[in-house]
Each structure stands twice: as structure tokens, then as C-alpha cells.
Amino acid sequence: MNLAQQLARVSRLDPDRPALFNGTQPVATYGEWAQRAAGLAASFAAAGLNPGDRVVLFQRNHPRYLEVLLGAWWAGLVVVPVNAKLHPGEAQWIIDNAQARWAFVTSDVAPSQFEALERQVDIETPAYEQLLAAGPVSMVHRAPDDIAWLFYTSGTTGRPKGVMLTHRNLMTMGLTYFVDVDPITSQDAIVYAAPMSHGAGIYAIPHLMAGARHIVPASGGVEPAELFGLAKAAGPLSMFAAPTIVKRLVDHAEAHGESSEGFKTIVYGGAPMYAADIERALRVMGPRFVQIYGQGETPMVGTALARAHLADTAHPRHAARMASVGVAQTPVEVRVAGADGQALPAGDIGEVLVRGDTVMAGYWRNPEATAAAIRDGWLWTGDMGALDADGFLTLKDRSKDLIISGGSNIYPREVEEVLLTAPGVAEVAVVGAPDPEWGEAVVAFVVPQTGTTLEAFALDAHCLSQIARFKRPKRYEIVDGLPKNNYGKVLKTELRRRLIGG
Image 1 (cartoon, rainbow, N blue to C red):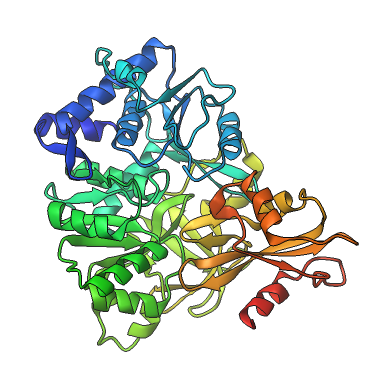
Image 2: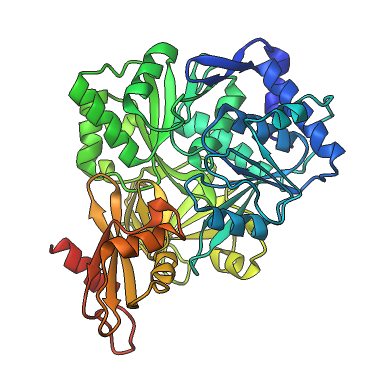
């Protein structure tokens, strides 16, 4: 089982079918895409890269992202997508931890050379084109449980953990999309406005299976006017969007009277969506939304709230369903359990557990974290929720302190560790505050050292020098002290209560 077989299959059936687009401009047909992927695989083999070796993708959204992705799989390699928003120092840590051999980058996000790499290739240079020109090579066979995608997500220590996703995990995810999210046809298109290193890029797999078109906006990101224009020009158009992206689309449609007819399906997830926001989205843009709940550890597959559920306004529990994240997707079981792992009765709150063929193989080089996360085949998600009698899951809180802002995961300890190195800082606690645009906003409560005056702009500059911009606090509260319990532990619940109380 090799995911690249999906590209080879479609290219044999219809080599002239348009495949890759930069905005409205065609970049490659399926036949050309397969030829370029096979050429890249030949260059990997000639350079001595072996099946299972890791290749990093640290680049902005770009049509060539998909060329590298499929070329690496064709050669039997493991791809390590890195969020283009990360600080180069954070990307370097991932490169080192993954023991990557090559990296494919764009110069706008990457330094001229990362350390400890055998080769770094800018995909917008002739050097990249030369790699594609090598003679095609036979596809490398991979077993279903061989790793295909190494996804780095925040861990309990604040350092990212490498989630090992296998060809079986991602194949199952791709097929599940057709059953639980949306049936795709070869006439459809997917647009990559959200980061391709995350859920948006993973959804390339089901659209590849269907022989659909893959469009990267010319801007490379989320520009509502551009996306509505692409929907008109290239629809039926689907996309993955964090709730903050959905809000921007709805704002634009309402402000400009835009028709949403070109959009087929907008899958939203990655952060809570307020019921009022999805009600407004449905009112303005119509029944083209599907919610999914999953994690990097069970990519895009946990539960789904189908468009039919969202549209069933006559159901007596419609309001409760709108506030839920839907029901278990077809290939997994979802359980709400107590600390002993036993299922709780309907309505009781416990930790959300998931079991099935999309659950990761484990964490890269971290058996202790793997053993803590996967017990008796169940993935312990760290999210708290309740199931109703019909199987709808409603998330209540997170057992971890993870902040989700604009669909991006931010672990407070990582930010705290950076702020504690700033001159004049004695103590710090970082929490998430409810935010109507971002879902949550990062807020830092900072205690200055005796006799020191702290300025928010200086703290902000310190954060920007060490971590990604999206992780830095949006507010700095300079306080005399932090609330603590009898054991000296900071009471973050009290800090959140202060923020909610104004």
C-alpha cells in the first residue's frame, strides 16, 4: 500500500485531466504530475535516500507542495510537513528531532540553510526543476503500517511531538471523507487557503482519489474576495477552514452581497464554532457546511456533524446538535470515559476516547508519550465531552491547557518558557481568553521582578524573536502576583475567570 498509487491510477485513467492550479492558471495535468513525482523519486534514489527516510516540507502554500509530497511517497519516504508560520528555530528543532535528510522550502519562510541537512532545496529555483527531470523510477512498495506522514503537534512538555501516521491511517481517512463528509467527483475542486502542512493538506488525499482539481490561491492564503472569485471561476469548490476563516468568508459575503453558489462544501474544524456563528453562516451562505472533530493523532477523523444534521431544524434537539461536533465517523468508535477507561452513561462528562484505523501508530521516538496516549487501542484525546443518547458528542473543556487560536494549537508552557527569559520577568502564566474572531486569544499574566517596570511592547518583541508570531500573546497583563493554591500551583481557572469577568 503506497498512497502515491492513487496518483498513478488517476494518471493512467485520464492523463490529460487538469490537476494542479496556481489560482486560475493550470500548472500540471495528472499525467504531468505523476511524471514529475516519479522524476523526483528517481532523484531521491540516486542521492541514496532510502525508504523510511524523512523529508521536510517548510514552505508557504504552493502547487509544488503536492509534487514534493507525492514524489516523496513514490520513493517510499516519510514527509514531515512543518507549519510555515513557525519560527526558523522551531523548524530546526523539528528537523533535528525527525532526523530529516532533505528539506524543500520557499525562501520567504526558511533561512538560507538549516543545520544538519544533507540538502535543502528551494522549490522556486532551477535546482528543483533539475530534480524533476530525472528519469522516472518504479514506485516503492510500502506496507500499510509503514509511516507516510510525520506530523508535529504540541506535547505535554510544550515541545512538539511527532505523530506517526501510516499509509493505512491516511488511506482510511481519505475513503472516510466520501462517506461521512462529502462525496467528491472528478468535476470538483479543492482550494488550499488554510496551511497545507495541516488538515487542508491532508484533504488532498480524498480529492486525489477522485481525480479532482487542486487549487492553491495566488495569494497563498485566506483572501475572501479571491476565494469567492475562485468559487465562481472554478467551482464546485470545497475547502477546509478553521472557524475564524469561516467567519471571514461570511463577513465578506454579507458585506458585499456575494453569491456562495460556487462553493460546494466548507469543512470546518480545528477549534470550537459558536452556535450563533454557524447559524449565521448557514443563513448567509446556505447549507454547504460540515463540521469535523479530530486530532493530529487521528487525522480529521473522530466525529462529523453532517450538513443534513445542520439543516434538520425541525428536530426537537436541533439546538443541542448545532452545539455538538456530531457523531462518530464510520471507521472509528468514540467513547466518553472515566479515569478507568470505562464508558460513562449518556450525558456524563468524561475524557473523549477514539479507536479505529485512523489512530496514529504512536509518537516518534517517544514511547512514554505513546503509552500514555494509547491504552488498550484507545486514543485518549485529552478533550472532555459528553455523548447524548443518539451518539452526538458535545465538547465541554480540555483536560490539557492547550489554546486553539484561529485553528492553530498553542501550548501555554512554550510561551511561558520564552517570557521567563525576558529581562525583568519574575513569573508568568499564559491562558486562553474567549475571542469572537479567533476562538481563543493568548493572554499572558506577567509578574515583574522587584523594582522593575515591564512594557508590553518589549515583551512582545522578546516573544517575536523566539517563537512564531501566531503564538505570541495578544494581551499582556502586568500583575503584582499570580493566584496559587496551597501547593504553590498557579490557579489558571482563576485567571480565566478574571478575563471572562473583564
